[in-house]
Amino acid sequence: MVKNEFQTLDTTFAALADPTRRAILDRLGRRPCTVSELAKPFPISLPAVSKHLRVLEKAGLISRRRAGRAQICRLEARPMKRASEWLERHRAFWDAKLDALEEHFQGEGQS
Image 1 (cartoon, rainbow, N blue to C red):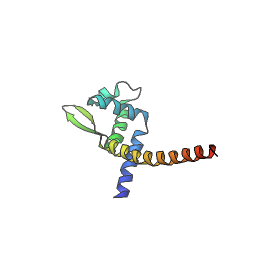
Image 2: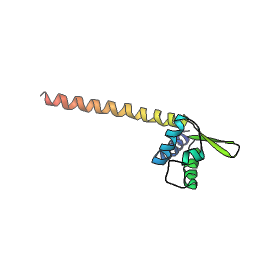
Image 3: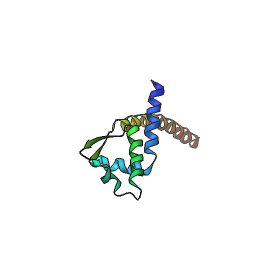
Image 4: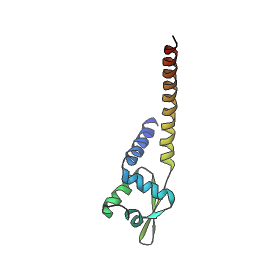
């Protein structure tokens, strides 16, 4: 279970590490788009965009469906929610540690 959770997180964070893929997700956050619509603003080839889409799909961040000849891509937010929850747990831990460190140094300055 834990190994699978970390593999999912690894795949999600690896997919989010690329600026092109993050830009694609931003666009899909507004509305579903065809592959051609997604490729339009990028100075890369359609096959390169398709590779990015495969990475996002493997991570579960997007889904695709056929509509005639076009492929419609849609954002799937569940993996990002899991990543956000993981980050939040670690943020809370480090916030507590940093607060304790700050209190320690403030107490030292008063002596």
